[in-house]
Amino acid sequence: VPEQIDIKAEIRRMCKEKNALIMAHYYTEGVIQEVADFIGDSLALAQKAATTDADIIVMCGVHFMGETNKILCPNKKVLIPDLNASCSLAESCPADEFERFVMAHPGHTVVSYVNTTAGTKAVTDVVVTSSNAKQIVDSLPKDAPIIFGPDWNLGNYINSLTGRHMVLWNGACHVHEKFSVEKILKLKKLHPEAKILVHPECKGPVVNIADKVGSTAALLKFSIDDEAQTFIVATESGILNEMQRLAPHKTFIPAPPDDSTCACNECNYMKLITLNKLYNCLKYEWPYIEVQPEVALKAIKPIERMLEISK
Ligand code: 13P
Ligand code: SF4
Image (cartoon, rainbow, N blue to C red; front, side, top):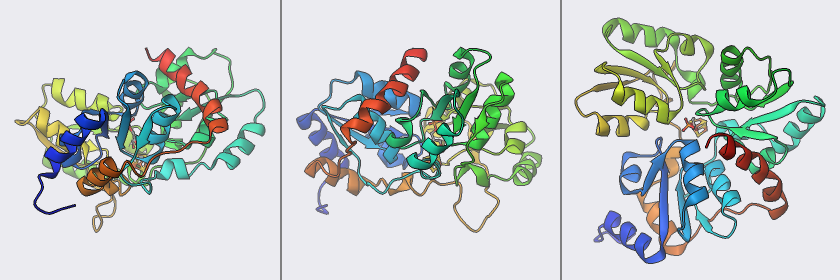
């Protein structure tokens, strides 16, 4: 990227010229969220992709989010600034192993978290996000046996909310499983007035001490609407950008991970999306997401079913 240019202005100019839509997840760097046209949680990003009339979608997020966009918009170019932006949950559930798991449980409805590859979605009956998982599981017949993958913590949480006994795949997010209940409680002693916000990918003991459990968008909304002035936030720390922007007078404290020697409350995959890479990606229209058409044809059904139920 040439040093003398105003990179953000140039990105916005190219967007207009190419009729491109930049979408960003809350976990990306603040500067990426600032330059994006649309910021959202996984559900909002999929809903936006399904309705946009842009010619190009630039997904500033992780690979499965770009794949979901491409599946929903097969005729659009879907760019992602770094193809290596993976997701530990999606990686914990390879499509061939998940298919064997499905075959080992005949007669089960297969519910998959959106944090999966297109191949895993292709052997799924209905996709969910953390925003709509309870609603979608509740919509299934009461006696339907269900398989849920890949996030064990989210599956366990949904089992507890719905009274179901879904069979769970044993996957986890390497960021969310690291939050330490002991460290959060210590922090709460220092800030007794603080409310604790927790993403349902966290482990059960962390979920149990939450004042609010929800998707990134739900936690954001709660932090703005609630009367509390201080919040301890147990999800990826990128979301603090938007919380602080929307409620500048409030205090947001990132929850500490169990290992204080690393920035473990950051998703290293989301942080691969940098402004320079975004600039180059828009300029050269590369790299882009590809999904094999036969996989996409199968994977679109459970995604559309989710969008239909979540309308
Ligand atoms: P949301 O759907 O809440 O945005 O979560 C996505 C994610 O990757 C959480 O780690
Ligand atoms: Fe995946 Fe975890 Fe990163 Fe979310 S925070 S994208 S679940 S690795």
